[in-house]
Image (cartoon, helix red, strand yellow):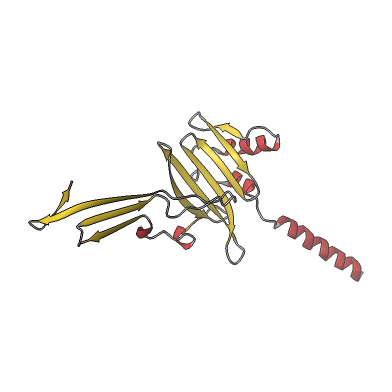
Length: 196
């Protein structure tokens, strides 16, 4: 009788452990609210996942009547090309205590120049405070201005990539582009005058 009770309890524990498994990004993508990606309806997301199951191209005609394509969809990473000018990357991250959270990087392209924003969500798609997980770079990482009063030179150094988040796991180094402009100036009547 004691052995049957032990087997019964172990069976219940195994069933509970099976239902409490970690959610894959595919599951989370299907439950994603439309506010996170307004151009994809629930049907569009289902179609993308269904196409992956059937070894088809993971694309769908979105609400703008253009095609959106999932370039990659794994258990913890997704790369979605929404249009030729926008994409989203999603990655499941683990906090120090092991709690999973979702990082979403939304990128738009203007003349081939990417502009990205980062957002964090719980696995129930509740928005999390971004600054709790992401430290903004200091302004000195973007632009540095130096003035040399002995030579009357103003130097402005601008870097286009002070902080880059790589989510694809490749960790390929990206070289930031730095542009330095030096101007000669003089002071007359308490005004700065640029010299040619």
